[in-house]
Image (cartoon, rainbow, N blue to C red):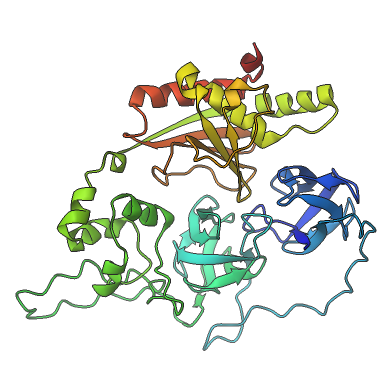
Length: 441
């Protein structure tokens, strides 16, 4: 069974990616995590990794070609039988413009925002919630929407500054990667559009009922904007990743908000009401030590890690196993006691690899394991994300974001580590990323 390699979206406004170079030749054996190609956009240049084991076959695009986001550029097959380059697919007829919302005749002009690919094996993204309403002013760094895949859930920035001229997908929808989901215009639109609606101004709050029943619980909030929805047809409850995680952490059931008629999607502002609706047992779980999470961040230049990886390739003659190298650097920051029995999970492009006791093996050569991780490292370099605040997970989480400079974020529950241990971990890992050669001394 073959695995399609697609052109990923490295930014919300990206329509194509330039293949700078193929790092593997047709017929080469590849392993999950091996760099396959270098892709360049107007924002960044990064290596794209293999998401399956096998042989590189059926290359459809050459170095120097601009390829539309979501298009298949090669395959990873179980055998070398189809090593010849596949012919480029015949040109298709011009793609139809995204469907106009009911009552609208055309889509406004402006920068088209697409559903990004958060992983190489991703075909669609589940739109959890919009953070902006039609007509709102937005900057490139503002969070525009929340997207959930089968691997992760992230907040995605707009990538463009201007005004929301159209929202062309609804919360609860599964949208194919590369499809236009919004339009951002330079001028404030006279009649911003939203799928299923024509007038985008947010509805005014309804007047309070003149004489509510004494025993009736007060409704915590009215729908904040046209983005509030009812439950999706599939029965999925729409909630932000942070709200979903915190509810799970406290043992709270989001279905109670649905039963109470609170409009979706749910955000942290709904947490208190969810707590008030919970039974005594779940409410007691809110006092769990992990609920009071540690959140630390550090800034550092990217040159040290980039030069170190290049040095490894020069010395060994082969591209380094980046996840294994990062696992070793992170495990080294745990200290002798923590590193001796550590399992470090490295998540990159939606794929996770677990390394057993990386600090006790040569850097980049730790064996893989299926054991539960004691530390999770999310390598999100090269994406549009500038930072995360998702709360504690089953193990402490280190997140690495940024391009020219790096942001390192540590999130952990107080039951997982003390504040002193958290400080030691993040400062030690940041020092190793800034000057990796320290790790070898």
